[in-house]
Image 1 (cartoon, one colour):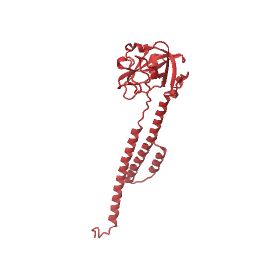
Image 2 (spheres, helix red, strand yellow):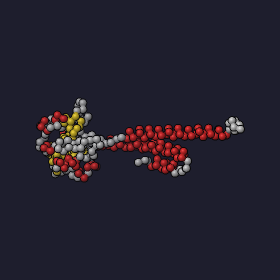
Image 3 (cartoon, helix red, strand yellow):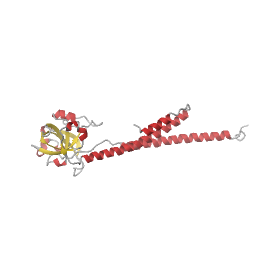
Image 4 (cartoon, one colour):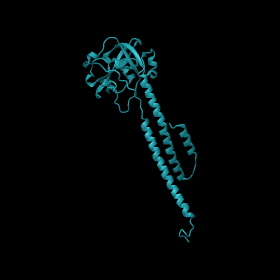
Length: 273
């Protein structure tokens, strides 16, 4: 959507009516650079808004945790990226694999290694219901739970975790494969239906990491941010079409000046009798 001031300017220009095709062409060449310049400027404000939003959400993940609210399921959007405290016990028999994933750079100690994030149902005592916990990342060699028995924590645990919401399927991502337990993206509704839990998913933080088990703290604030690319595109288009308008105007102006000189010259000097 164009900014209001740009729309008003275009409307004023478009109200100029003429039957001259050349004037219409000139008008069109003038509207395009003005409109694209306005779009580029608007994207600068959008970029700043997006950067501020990302910073706000990242700050949210670092605030002190609160007890998980009893109405969390109705406030997921509001509480997204908030830190909460939960207690309960896991059901490791229903764990899901969010795959493929690399380890969060804040928790890795070496080069990036392919792996998966382990999502496990947890019976939350305070809520009195089953929820989903993203326990963290494991390398591919430890994706099979039988290879990490010491990480399959039994009994009641206390966790600090980050509230997450569902995500739409990315354009080029494969579909989630329930039979092979390969979840390409975070479809909480589908995950909860498969595991029989409420539609609540929390990312366990780094303090929940256990020897031989998933490495917690895999939350990443990810928001689509293509505004810098749009800024370059719109300004480049404005510059190009502005140059076209200047070239067209200069050519017409030169032709008009030449014609005026020609017809202002006496016929005798033009070689006419």
